[in-house]
Length: 124
Image (cartoon, rainbow, N blue to C red; front, side, top):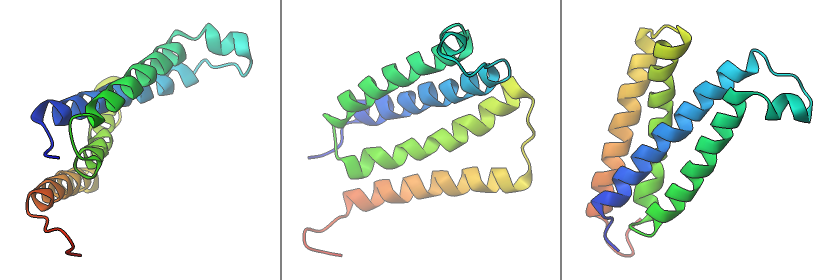
């Protein structure tokens, strides 16, 4: 089955949602109390959970449109989104090593994408 563009874009969007959820969880952790009411009353935590649920549903839908071996590596873009979002919303700093990591992730995803186009049945 050839992977459809909409499926790849949906996975990419899903990673943005789940990465945003992680930023919300980080913000919510500052005021988190470890009891059920404290968690339910924490808007950041609950917003993050909601984004993860939506992301889970969307990723299942996207898997209908292509090969898991092509779509799943796109989830690695979450590391990119979290790095960039943490700079914007948490005031964290990007250094050379983080930028090199982002470039490496992008190259890896591209190589996996190319590899899926050239795969030969039975080849290792």
